[in-house]
Amino acid sequence: MKKVGFLVVLGFALLGLFGCVSDGGGILGPSSAPTGQWEVWTLKDSNGDGKGDSLDQVFPVEITIVDDVYQVVVYDTDFTAPVEDINAEFDFPDPEVTFHIYRVEGFPDYDLDMTGTLNDSSDNTEDYMFGEYDETVGNSSGQWIALRPNSKWYAEDPTSSTLKSGGDPLTQVKKVEAIEKFLSGRLGEEVQIEISENLKEKLE
Image (cartoon, rainbow, N blue to C red; front, side, top):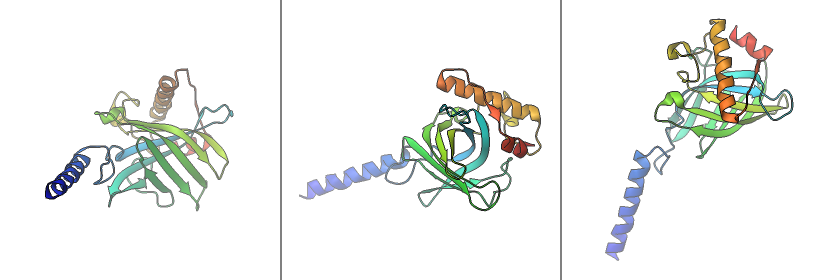
């Protein structure tokens, strides 16, 4: 009996060890794969064809792990100051990711429920999240993507990729082109998207 008990304890010890050193969210905590900074873009389905065709919102976020729970902070457009009136929650029940981003005080109000998947690469410039969302306040839906600020999908110069308040309009055009290229490759067909008036005001 003592030998059996020892083997059981040893088995749990090894399971805990491998859960700790792996990136898959073992028994010692959630996966670190989705942590760090992301730019989360929502693409509203304005034509009702199930495809996102209008860039509607962008949320620069940073995901951390605190007490084995994912925490999300939403930042302004250059990752310098948190935006206090936008709330965000994140979870990663691998392989699915879920975002809940909402604002109940301020303009515009919105409540986004987002589900998708995470592509985690050894080089985080190739990381992305992609999925679908429902927005309950405005009764809209569409697709969303999340890219790292230094994503290879952005400009050739990674240092110029981060959104800037009052930034170079050409940079924003490049971002739209990059997202079109990303979606075209992901969906296997040419994609053309527009920038919503709401997002234009935010980027100006």
